[in-house]
Image 1 (tube, rainbow, N blue to C red):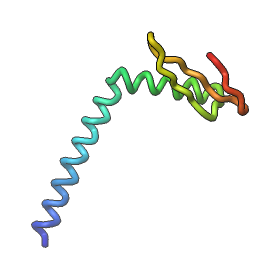
Image 2 (cartoon, helix red, strand yellow; image 1 turned 60 degrees about the vertical axis):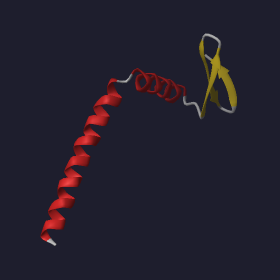
Image 3 (cartoon, rainbow, N blue to C red; image 1 turned 135 degrees about the vertical axis):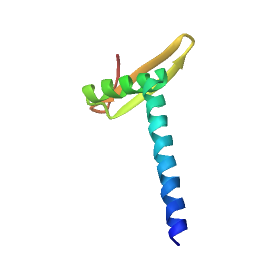
Image 4 (spheres, helix red, strand yellow; image 1 turned 45 degrees about the vertical axis):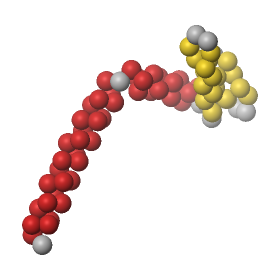
Length: 72
């Protein structure tokens, strides 16, 4: 039983290292940065919904504020 507990502890430790590595990778990702910026903008506008609409050249973002879809 002691050996099983040690194996479980080692597995948890390995998973913690993998999680930390994944979090560092995510923080360096340009996609994560873009999503963070979109969410921060929505929060600053107090938007209830974010519309992400693909366009031929990029994306169109619209935010719903007070039940009205706004264009920014």
